[in-house]
Image 1 (cartoon, rainbow, N blue to C red):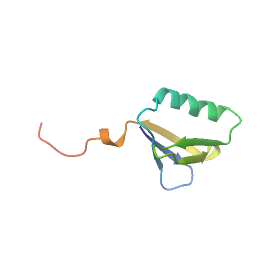
Image 2: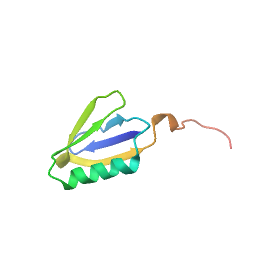
Image 3: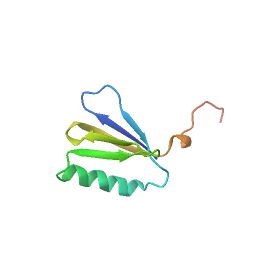
Amino acid sequence: MEVRIAVTQAPREITVDMGDDVDGDELVDEIRSAMTGDSNMLWFTDRRGRRVGVPIAKLAFVEIGASGADRRVGFSAV
């Protein structure tokens, strides 16, 4: 599963490639609870075990989508 994170006043988004075993609904619940709780950082762990922390006050958006292998790019005649 791929997660794209935008931070305010930053020109590029952060992309975190999480494991395929991550449940999208559970991830949304974790993000929601982090934003409404006392935490000031939102933490993600990618499939290699690296941790990415984003300050909640600077969070612009979080996009949760399918893994990059599921994307199709190209042209064809239908």
